[in-house]
Length: 254
Ligand SMILES: NC(=O)c1ccc[n+]([C@@H]2O[C@H](COP(=O)([O-])OP(=O)(O)OC[C@H]3O[C@@H](n4cnc5c(N)ncnc54)[C@H](O)[C@@H]3O)[C@@H](O)[C@H]2O)c1
Image 1 (cartoon, helix red, strand yellow):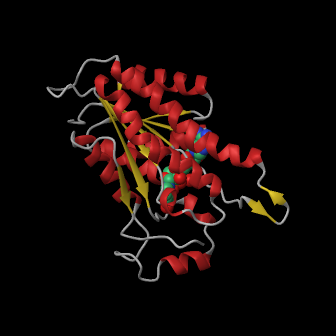
Image 2 (cartoon, protein in one colour):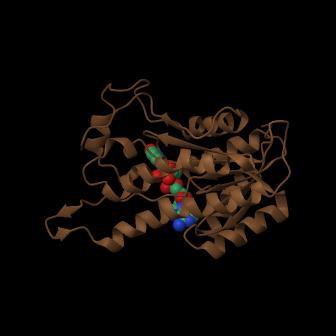
């Protein structure tokens, strides 16, 4: 689809990969609304790239619906929805104190998985009710963010891995459900990007990661994630697939 003038929302858009996606979409001519938790960070991030911003917790279904209403009031029917809101979730399934705290596990699932599902389904419903954009009958696209950990299962990352693995699994399933409505679903599985969420990685893990097992042998630049978001939106043949954006890295067990 030609993204020029199309209404786009980006969750987690005040930071890291989401902010880079919002910036790239805005630079490509889309009318972007940034959604994130903190009103001040949202306002600053939106001002920086000249777009609209709404504070919203993706785990609050009513707040998501209200934020989507707000985005559509300013920028028109949402045609591009990018899910980047997410939290880390380091915890062993069984540690010295016993089995994992289910409330902590559920919190990661709630934000990373259920937040993504909530925004995806609410946006897809709006897209499917709108007029087609072109001769293919495209009405919109949802781009979700998983992680390469969905495939590689690091020790101590069970909750995060489970949340991201489910996003991977849902990609083709949701794409199939939304096909009659002209809505595509794609997922990006990033490798290692230097954003605030990566700060929880211990230095020795970072040193191990950057030891020549990927090319280029560096953290990804969030702008490279933003560029892929725009490319995916633009290319109608991309649907129901997960793209690893990871410089070829394969993570070790720990
Ligand atoms: N940085 C990486 O290396 C990397 C690798 C793989 C996957 N990811 C995924 O990419 C996505 C973006 O991560 P990032 O690296 O930009 O991290 P980040 O911490 O810079 O950005 C995440 C944003 O999500 C927001 N957020 C958290 N909970 C929210 C909620 N309940 N409602 C609304 N917003 C909420 C945060 O406020 C933050 O601004 C995440 O889903 C993350 O799991 C990142």
